[in-house]
Amino acid sequence: MAGEFAARKLKRDRKRYKWKQIKYRNRILKLKKRKDPLEGAPQAKGIVLEKRIVEQKQPHSGLIKCVRVRLIKNGKQITAHVPRTGAINHVSEHDQVVVEGIGGSQGGAV
Image (cartoon, rainbow, N blue to C red; front, top):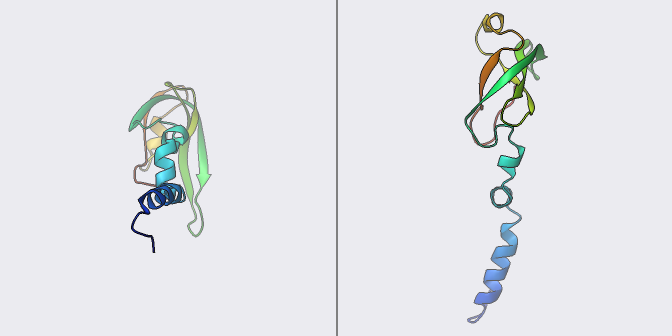
């Protein structure tokens, strides 16, 4: 238990232990914006480089239709999921597409 005049120590300890919290550290160091290929934006334009098929993670089985996209704003390459049945037939190489983030606090897994 801290003493009557221990405010400085309490404040210093609180400041130091905040860094052990992952959410605090990520927020202060702005790690989400650095890691995110969309750089915090909800959507971005890109050019389709190739069509690709990705296997689903365990315990599901199946093939996910995806495209490899180079973003116009920063040149980063990402793999984007093409939703719905037959949608991959409407996308061809060198097309310009709009990519949107998965959303949610932790992104998502495909």
